[in-house]
Image 1: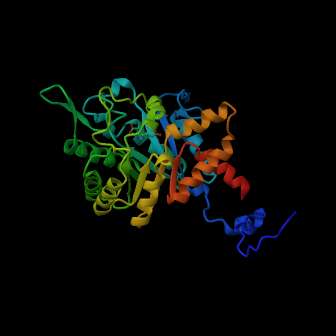
Image 2 (image 1 turned 60 degrees about the vertical axis):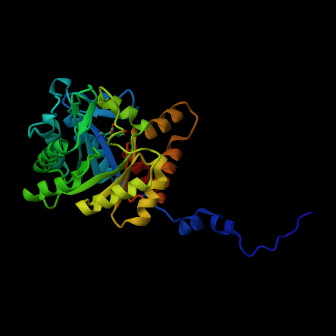
Image 3 (image 1 turned 30 degrees about the vertical axis):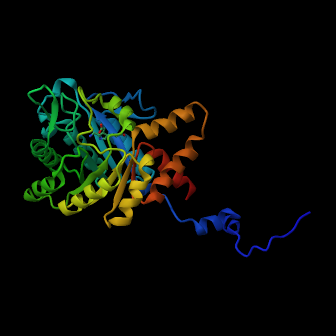
Length: 335
Ligand code: PBG
């Protein structure tokens, strides 16, 4: 017995075929929305990263080649993370502002090969710090380690200047020290780098999803954790507070990190602020998709795309993702 329902409103009408679905589609992901994080080291050979299948620590030559392939697929920005030799790590992290260091050389090589590509650098001490922390570490009388805020900010300013002098288009402080955006802005402007953008890690959470990344750089903190500077995963109002400060201090782009488990934070910031917003799909989010797909449990391409679309739908304008090159290729193939 079939009885027609009296239904003037039938949402399924808008889903009946791909042509209609693409007309009513609300969110669209483009290759140019993606920022490609790349690891670089000071060796001649590229090296696979055990904790991040599909990612490598690139030699300078490999870095330029990989960037070229991403560019070909429509990606317009890369962000660099250096794996620094143990022998160069010190408790004052001074290698982070060495003009002849790995990052300035990598920036120089990339800007020479691809002048139109936006080169973003990470500003934080952890790859250079023998303590493995993003800031300078001091021990109090009881032997408890603490992170020095204001002293760290001075070093971060030198690091940002070093990257700007090498030709970086965007510097991206990921350290979560208080007041660093304003101080970096001042330092850049004083040296005539008014055009260099600051992409601030506004709401960076003390997340367990960073594990595979720290494996890639061997940058685990030697003692303690990052909870006195990175945010508590339980908080979202605090993200608004951080964002207000970043706006006042002159950030050009704000960021939420990780992305997938913090979509509500992305949405809250989108509803409150006008600034462009990035979200970072971090190493743990990447690895979960990769390993489930390697086990044959999920369709890698479909889940990759859905995860990125979800981040964009939540309100991010751009996404840092280890899938950038692969996702951009899929997107260009469909256009
Ligand atoms: C450190 C930094 C981290 C990441 C980017 N910059 C790790 C951390 O804060 O411990 C994580 C990125 C990822 O997991 O993909 N300044």
